[in-house]
Image 1 (cartoon, rainbow, N blue to C red):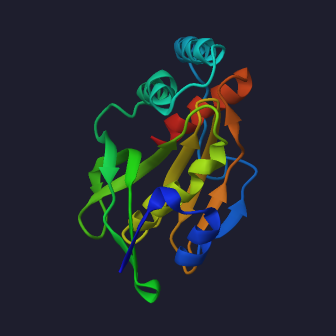
Image 2: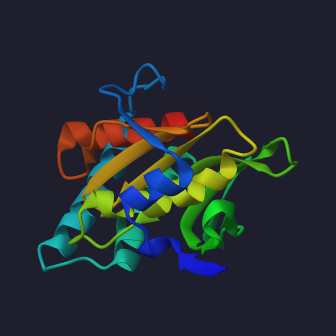
Length: 209
């Protein structure tokens, strides 16, 4: 059996191995109810944007700093640190066996948020959001193959899961649906450095949470 790391897979590999079909969705509102932000939330969001922009002005921001400067503060502000939602870091995925190809895929998720009050059909916690981060110099879609690989496991036990891939500046949300074949919808790309898009970014995170 051949062992493959998820991070080495291309999007073409993912389509072939898992049968994923891609769709485009031009709006978040059919899927989520986006509520207005309070003045306090907008103020905090401005701090997050300015902190990241200051680092970005000095050059490429590493993946670790992208998490520290943007993802973690945004998740806190959106409510992901409050019960019953819990987050875990660098979570190993269960090995994915591709029987027809005698292949096993392994990998490690950057960030996983689960709802500890909701169980899936195999009595594991419901996956709320899977996040794959990259450094600021990498195109945001570079994280998509890994993200889809990790999310594929959850589709065995729940009908859908949200995914997010980001380089700190750009945020690509993906709505991933169970099916034969499974489907992933690419939502409009959001940008932390653009005021209106940044507000929508936090609104989406709050709605998912």
